Image (cartoon, rainbow, N blue to C red; front, side):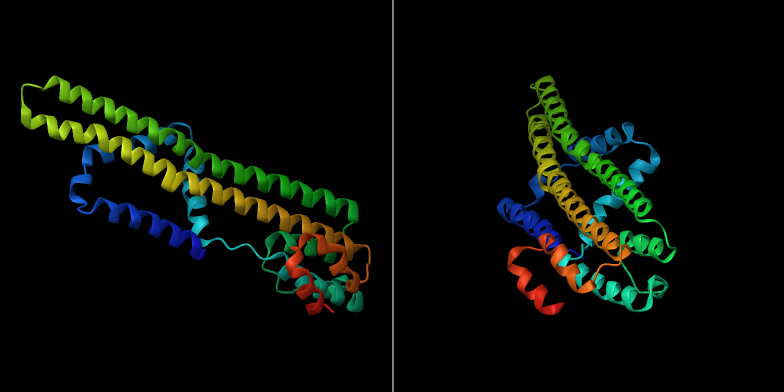
Amino acid sequence: MDIMTLIGLVGTFGLIIMAMGDIGPFIDMPSVYIVLGGTTTAVMMRSSIPEFVGGISVGLKTLLAKVEAPETLIEQLVELGTIARKDGMIALEGQDIKNPFLAKGIRMLVDGTDGALIKKALEVEMTNMSNRHKLGKSFFSSAQDIAPAMGMIGTLVGLVLMLGNMSDPKSIGPAMAVALLTTMYGAIVANVLCLPICQKLQTLADKEAYNNELCLEAVLFIQKGGNPRLLPDVLMGFVPPKKRQALADATA
């Protein structure tokens, strides 16, 4: 679990609630129906059932996903390269590889696949993975755009109700609450939930693409029979400068 996402989510809502003091006046169910219900159904309109369900699961990924550090991958790749050089590619079969992209590349090595075909297959996998990430991100990007609009619609509904019942002073307060709270709810949904999730998904997608490029280079290096001792030097550009010395020591 990504603890920073959870801390940020809880902390942001906690600060908002602390600023409210008494939360009671800020709860209005008609406003909730307009913003949350309206945003959800509007997103449904632009999605198929698999896309809608997939978008929700992608959102949960921001809490649960954990991308491996490049240096961790490199250490594993050096170990795999050493095994392949000593015992042959077939010895890589059955190795415990958690990264699915790397596992696919290793399976192709075990099968004796040509290097050009390995590169083409893994590049296609990278492209399709990127497209899936874009679809997941677009789900929350749409919600981010729609939520403030639903808040504005709720504001207009509240104003119409208020102006239509000016003769009844008791109705002005609830109508004004709908008018103002829908705007607030829309801003919270868009900027506290959807925007950070979109940015987090983009960060995760960038990290995965980065790691996949690293794995591709390493798999092709192993396929060509390269010396595993040289693999850290080949892949060192994928590691932040501050961590390069530690990686060099670990793979020496």
